[in-house]
Length: 106
Image 1 (cartoon, helix red, strand yellow):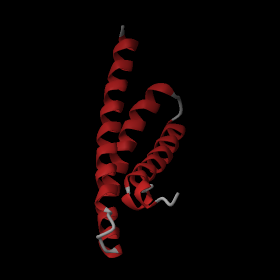
Image 2 (cartoon, helix red, strand yellow):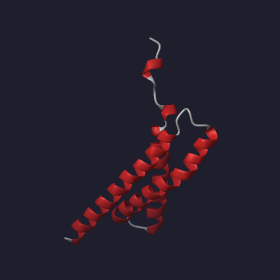
Image 3 (cartoon, one colour):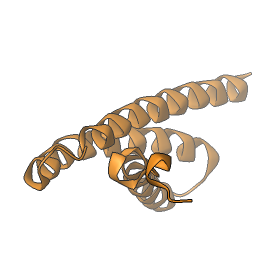
């Protein structure tokens, strides 16, 4: 019974962490539009990226602590996964990296 409750707590906490982390990172990437100057883009990224990284890291810490053994392994995997996922989500949300089908020459 305790194992079921701990896995439920792990799943809910990690899922909420991943949802909020994705929301933070996605909105950060969306703010970096074409009209924004590069200096403003750097300021937006510096302001929002650590928040998304921290929320992702917390979600991964909760998940990996329930799934793996070894404190160093859990911390290294959580930090690495959060860093990669936060950068991936921000880059996917940036309008500059999206394909624009209206400019496609046939």
